[in-house]
Image (cartoon, rainbow, N blue to C red):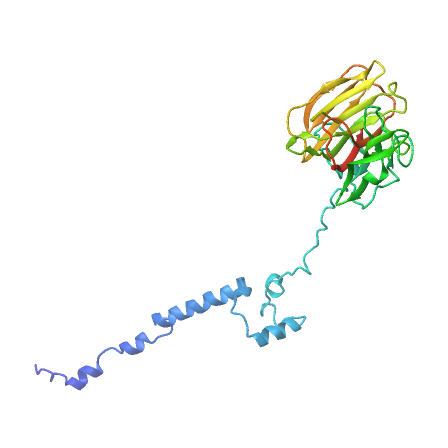
Length: 337
């Protein structure tokens, strides 16, 4: 049997399968398949989360912002928070809660630290350049130059020795011969609220600068005092809140049962040449005294209930030193509402 002649190289090439045509069938190329899958994913993402599509150009964003209706349901339909972020002008305004109005008696705290409800009834801060005559008068039961309140004093009360300025009342004792019913060697200053303000029960406090004795500045000079007095002595009582006596500062109470006075205490400490606060809490049957906020003692017998007025004085007595000035920063009286 005759054999067939072997194929030539060209015939072998022509008989090979067309692999290139097979690899090029649609869907068979991996690169194209990957691209198609990516396109599907992108389209699905565009439909599900349209606002995450790449933003348009600034010109197109401006055009969309000016249009009330977008070009298509999903064409740059950005959430409002991204299209127009909130500003202070668009945010809802919450009106601040109003602060409570201060009650008049809460304007000035009670530095004596006495607990309870209080209403401020009298207050003079002495911020003017002269004495407020609507609250105070000079002299003792009279006008002009008057005799002293105590016959053992060596002075007359002279309105010229009362002055204001620098935020304080000044009462100055000087050596000067004056006649006020009798001849005296000194002129001092006294003011009182007699006829303008009196009170029954309450807390009185005053911030005071007491003069010191030269050479011994720890001792209080002269006979300065912060006290209250009734119209009829001793029936209506006398409350000496802070009284300079021979260099010390003491608290006393005088009443019909004890005209000579009950000494509550003369606390140790330096009360001269510096600002100090002196207070007395007058309650029914009891008076408690405070020096610089410290309770120094109480009186519980013979306490009167008649109205009293306020007295501030710098008189001649004790360790006399002139010229010497007692200053008062303020005086306040509180009562229970």
